[in-house]
Amino acid sequence: MTLRIDVSLRDALLSSHTFADRERITIGRHPSCDVVIDNLALSREHAAITWDHGEWVVRDLGSRNGVYVNGTRKPVHALASGDVIGLGKYALAVSLTGGHAPERRAAWTDPGAAAGAHLVVKGGGAGGVFSLARDVFSIGGHKSCELRLPGALAPRRLALILRGLGGYSLVNVSARAEAVWKNGKPVADRCWLEDGDRLELLDVLCRFATGPAGQAG
Image (cartoon, rainbow, N blue to C red):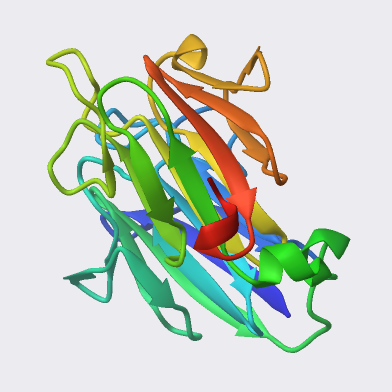
């Protein structure tokens, strides 16, 4: 299915973007985003639109100012033609036309991934096993985060773990690439997760594990 996004500011059309055969589209002020809006009111990677179970879904990636759909703040929302996504003062009009769905990554058919996943936390004063049953699992110092990082220096939002058609992915939403690591390498933007991956989130050590909670220890 083809997705078109028309970006407007105060009723003036700024740009149009058309996407087909894509799994994920990023929106934000970072130059690497698919839809770049260079405004300080937006986060570096503010929102993502993913192809999820036969529909396009917009998700807030832990932004400070939020994502609005048709005037209502929505952390997650399945899109339909005519919807308007609000990001700060910008309006993103959505148009959907028929077509083929993007192909799923082979990882999605992996029985371990389909059974669920967990984050095994072993250090930094935030130990435990956390289920990744939600589409968006937030990590940071804010009280709303599913995994709350200790310490006064922990950012409000450090990272997100997203569940989608491709499996699970880790997104660094902080301002520092060196704040999030996977298997000894910094994650500046986004990476896919596989069973057994070792994560370092500031001073908190974690392991990503697929399968039932009893096998995640």
